[in-house]
Figure (cartoon, rainbow, N blue to C red):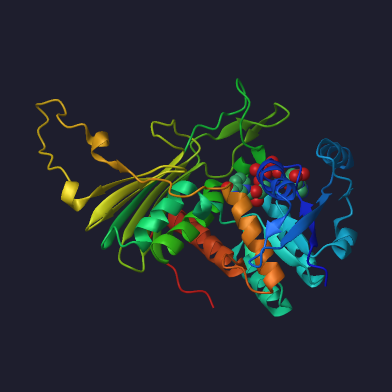
Length: 380
Ligand SMILES: NC(=O)c1ccc[n+]([C@@H]2O[C@H](COP(=O)([O-])OP(=O)(O)OC[C@H]3O[C@@H](n4cnc5c(N)ncnc54)[C@H](O)[C@@H]3O)[C@@H](O)[C@H]2O)c1
């Protein structure tokens, strides 16, 4: 088989993620650099077919980027590619992925893989039985800040990790007096929206890959803003959760606590930040930066509310250097997936990992609804 070009069908490419991160920053960037470099130094080029529901939008996108292949007939176009990629809104993903697996295509998809855990597990089983390469976007692991965190973990910087505290969020405008900066379906449960479904999938693979599997969750999800305005300026009921406060117990005994909110204003250096405290040292990692404080350099603050703060706490941390060039995280994972397809091996961030993300999201929602701690059993 000719390995010098691989056809990829990109579905949902008119959307926010499909266009910016996957077409522009990944597939087109890979094409511009001459393809994905393989271990033997040769390159494999990507030949995209843009797919979606709106012919005019697809044609405009294709023209804008000098592409010729686009289609609204996704099923037929599967015949012309080796990889099917899906960045449609979540509720539309499952049937499309199912068809791509049945057609024997390798499948790469945005998260969450499906709306529900049973659906995601079924897709994972089908993909495994079909012998295809399957992967789901795990972009946070490719962020410079988290890659530096990974380096610290691998280098034994933390000693025993005690706790992880994550803060994710920003204010998403309601859409009345200022346009919302995220699509309205995110705020409607009936359309697959909700911050738990969206973010707990990320938190599962971040925690699992850096600090160990999540074994129990206690969460409170809520809808702080019950009324929003959609893309047409029409008011709608926000039926999905827009904030979630979660405690995650890890297999190692470490406790992670992560706030996720689209109803908070940022007083942080980055839109997501994790503080990791270990016996030997602590780190604060964001999208790009990572700062550390070793136990040997830990100051000894003394609680005295009668005095103003005497120590410049933020200055007592040391910046972790880049020591490498960090490419766009979405592109880096695309390249890894393509190399896996060419090598005929499995992708490490597969549908089973995606299913575990959904397991955590569903457990978080159950915990919130029933007001109790939920243990997660390993998926079989
Ligand atoms: N990895 C990440 O960090 C990240 C961030 C945001 C969103 N996402 C995921 O990416 C996916 C797309 O999110 P987005 O923010 O780009 O959404 P979006 O609304 O901007 O795009 C949705 C895409 O799906 C298509 N679509 C197909 N069927 C549809 C239908 N019935 N109704 C409406 N649109 C339909 C749209 O045409 C569009 O191309 C979601 O699954 C979301 O969870 C991932």
